[in-house]
Image (cartoon, rainbow, N blue to C red; front, side, top):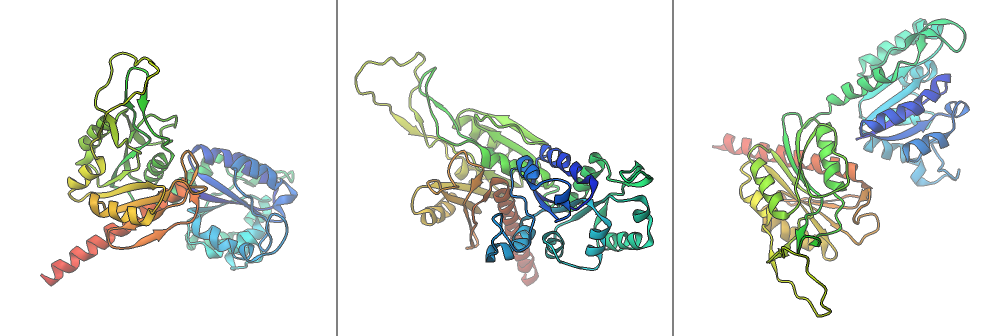
Length: 411
């Protein structure tokens, strides 16, 4: 999930750098937006290096300082893709700005354009914090749904003692997780996910496989867990770490993956089959290493079990999502697969396209739904793609339920 971290101008701005690291450890992607005053205390380069993302500092100019249409509407794009807006530290001036709907910089404009949950962590002088104007602003923002992480008490940079210090990391992160609980729209769902390649052995030292890294399937598992689902991840061999709160089942071959999936299908309300399963395996596996003879070697191959088709055949009320990694005629092949496999959704991409191939952190996909909707997505991170896939799954479920309700009403 993506958090936009707003940093405003105060001595505590340096603590936001530590906050970026801590949020990343929880699996969040962080984009930092800095006010002009914040840059007086810490540089954008620090946040860019820590987050690995572009740091936004101006409303109407790009990194080179030249105004263009893309930069003029960038606050809308950022607002649409953020899952939570966190401002830490939030100064008294910025709180007043939000309360009265002023929008004279990127961060305040983003606040008005976003419908995501908002967490504000104020930091200021104790007298400024206690002033009736600030307290009125805090009350108004709370009434609108913003979560306020009250400042800690202690020795302040101004030399005074009292409330005003930026709250500790754990308190801020707890507020972030609490705010996102309201976004846990997969609570009560069980999501069964496959990821990575399979390996089909030729002999004790060689096997047939493919170039899948597993990153797409692991991103879906991570996002589904963050959105509240119970997640089973059936994975072929990868070097990836298991996402938090995900039950991982390691397999090697297509046959092992098929068995692991079918064993858990009855408990799954959603099945997302993102693994690149080998289509063929050797008819015979040599018990000893096949020696090089210098002559042409032929290996007989037989089809592996079609996991997607078997899952869709036995899905009952499970929503089934398949993947189509193509090199040509992407839309045509995806629609054929959608029908032939009896899936509810096919996620298709051209693996030869720049930014959409194997072992990348980005993807460019089109979602083909059984109800006829085709949804092309721009180049996004795989976590962003994962969220869009799950959004489409929930849309399909809502459509199916409304259709069933209409049928009952007519009956």
